[in-house]
Image 1 (cartoon, rainbow, N blue to C red):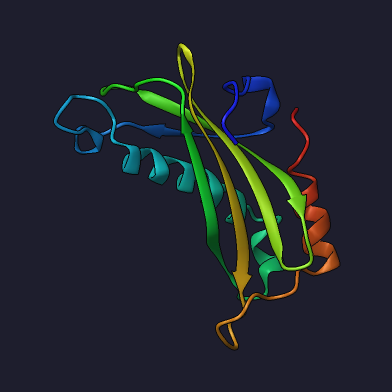
Image 2 (cartoon, one colour):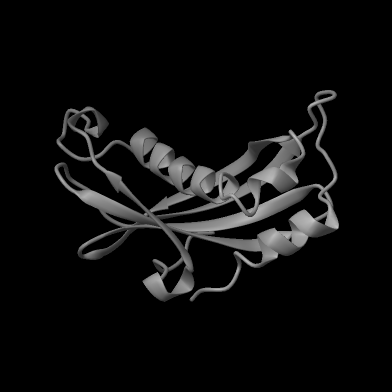
Length: 142
């Protein structure tokens, strides 16, 4: 995945998150685990969308692969914007691409593969046609 930092224009869905002092490490920058949580907030913003959440049929999203690239340091205090876009929808998984931005530009980027766990048992649920359409609509930048 390593490559240049994505531009803001690559994303159509956005949420804002406030940085916390607890997000920092002993060197004063925002910890990599905190950045992973910021990306999670962006994915949950997507899956909690009223147009998408009802289509899950009780299934819960789960990350089965997460790759992060850190492009530069991020410092507290401040706010970040998490850009999210659906890159691919398969029969049982969805690929999500994200960027984490402060006022100066992209700080980190992520690629996640998510499945929806079937509420009837520990397996990946099939993605319905309607859910597929709703997720694919999140793939285009605005």
